[in-house]
Length: 194
Image (cartoon, rainbow, N blue to C red; front, side):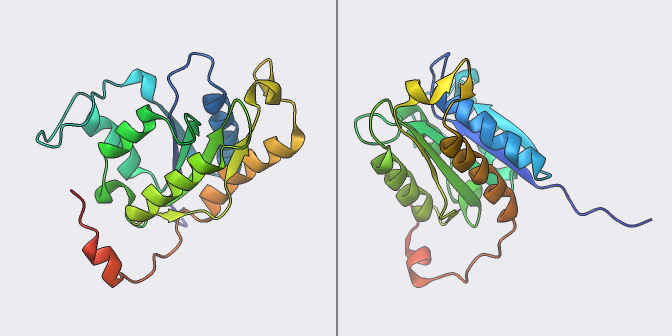
């Protein structure tokens, strides 16, 4: 009997609290593509967790341990956010603040940004910087969804090009989930956090 290779796990973190979230819809499409590529997938919907604003003097707050564990145990993470004031959402920032190197160091991370208006590029750039500070391996491919209300109809993509980019993000998360991390650098040893 031959031993099967372990299944890759991909968790998507939805940084939106809206009931009808375009971010969540897009992440589900990315997860569908990851599942089609053979991964076990999971949507971490932040609406379902009690995550008070981070108090760094406390070891555990609300559901912070559960959220951090789900991210830590994944082989790859997709971070999805609506764009607020040119950056990513406060709810996603707070979730990331409850995590750290244990959850992200050497982890493959894919980024997805959604905007009501123009491209959410600055939100994606800000997330990329945060992930790099946590020594994550951020996929070069990212998915941006501008004018989100026009990008979906009845919960489905209407723009095939955007849907393809989102699906590609899910496939790339699986493809690069086990990428070998680069050797540690002087800079990574200096980035010890607060």
